[in-house]
Image (cartoon, rainbow, N blue to C red; front, top):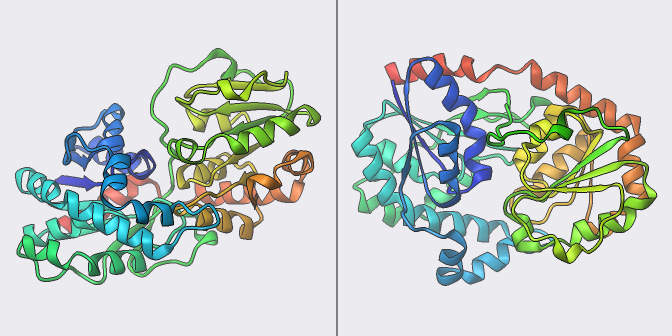
Length: 373
């Protein structure tokens, strides 16, 4: 079986699809990932990748073509949902030609697309093969898909496609107790993938003090800056814990001299780091949120746009963490993260739920059946 994965060109969108890609490869199937820009990082997972938009820089592309939509999507008080849909449709249109061209060359038996990149449905319809949507967090995909497709009429016409299916089979990696199940959905365990790395020695050692992992993801820190981190640093000396700032490729010089209980690292696999932590503080990205739930630890989420408010609300409502703003980050809140047993119990309940979910390997047989017709 030949399976084409199509993803929005960003790490947070393509990484959640890696475990299923591995499962398919382990079962002997051929896999190709169609993406671009930051999404090309998935090649480091040992996968074959087609760059459907060579030279694409998403930030420059949006700034040059739809700067008003970008501002509305990045509203720190909450994104404008319609602006997000228009932004998704704009990028889908721009990449559809490359996606269709790749699909026609690869000739897949089935196409799996992450929930934002509905242009894959156009390719699937043109080739006459089934398509499956792969969700990546707590945002539900049905309405997003319908509204995005509605704006791609000219794109479909360009490829001789009159319409795409209204109902699409969906792979849902959110813990069932935290979302409302979608029609035609397959539940699949979220297996965190954070890229490979040679681990620093300290991350495997048992910490002497309670450890808190802090991250702002791969995109937020470049958009909203280090404000939340500065708030945390002001409170850190008064909290009996070790803070590990996993901020990636970011200039932290502006933070000045760090408190004795704060460690700054570049890139360390979040899955490994969180296994040694009692809590996490982050921006609310779907991958980070699910990684903390996989580790069974409570989290403070400071959402700053996109689907992060949805993820934060899901965690808060389940009792497995706290949703707030950067201004809320103080000594009392961090101490609560370390010591609140109700938060910890809820987080561990979700971890147990996740371990009972069907594995990516179990989805392979379903895809085989779908491709066979």
